Image (cartoon, rainbow, N blue to C red; front, side, top):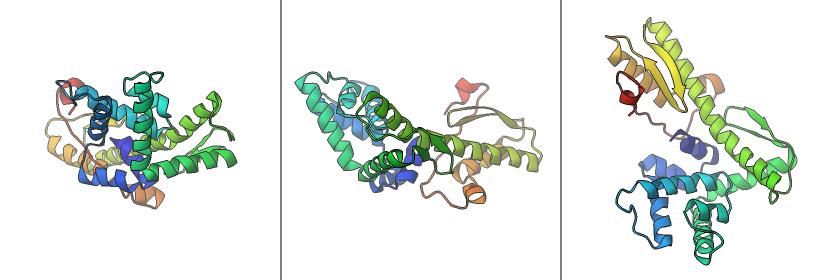
Length: 239
């Protein structure tokens, strides 16, 4: 959940920081709230669908979704009274719960009105153009991009820092193991026989403590996490 951690770092939202530091499942709790709004039992046998709906609703709202989009995410029809109620109450619930994220959304709107670009944690800019009306289709699109770029872009840049750290450690230690590929925030490596334990610990350290201060002069306040899987192929290794 690297994007969620970057969002917490950017917004410094106390509720979101509390969830991450306590290891609580934010998506499950939002999923339970959606099920409650709809008058349905959570899980419907598996628990997967409702948690997925909660995750989708959280990120949709984080990236600027209005009530009608949240109603759709919750699998209701926003044109019906029930869907209208679910969408509005879910939007209000998330707005009140994550005041720091809402303040960041408001600040991003002000930034677009004046400068027309946004920056991620590491200084990378995304130029979008000045916009002062976010109720039009074009304004809504620009706002979604302005909210998305610092989070996904920040997560992508953090992965690059981690990749570089792994690469230089492999060179320094003279390891034959190396990076093959990346998939979003996951790293696929080929490990030479006899180097497994050393590489696992090295990768764990690079993910948990990336050298952000070395390159950018600050430390991340949000703790990072890592899951490591080992197998003969990607399917077996995926944790």
